[in-house]
Amino acid sequence: MTTVHVAAAQDAQILAPNQIVPLLIGATVDEVERELVLQTLARCDGNRTRASRVLGLSVRTLRNKIRIYAASGIEVPAYHD
Image (cartoon, rainbow, N blue to C red; front, side, top):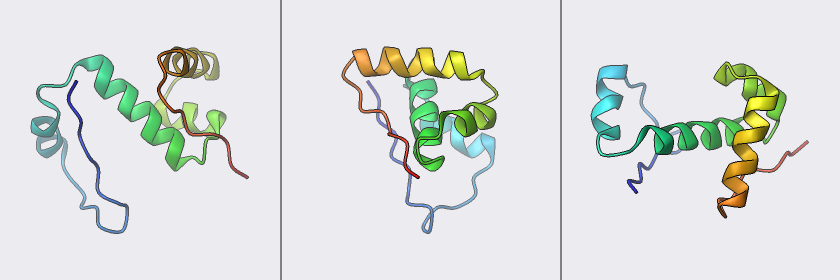
């Protein structure tokens, strides 16, 4: 499994897609999707409705992905008010 570390928001640079793709080479589509889902959830403070809108997924699809991740022992960001 390939791990791609993302800089903290205050240190992050805006990258064009052609700059991001080389960072992802070696990762599977499932790994990239999982990281995108988890990072989006974290940025949405665990709010599944908001994260699903950002990702362009139904809440049901997002919930199913979260269930699979949790069953695999992957920590999923919890909802925070």
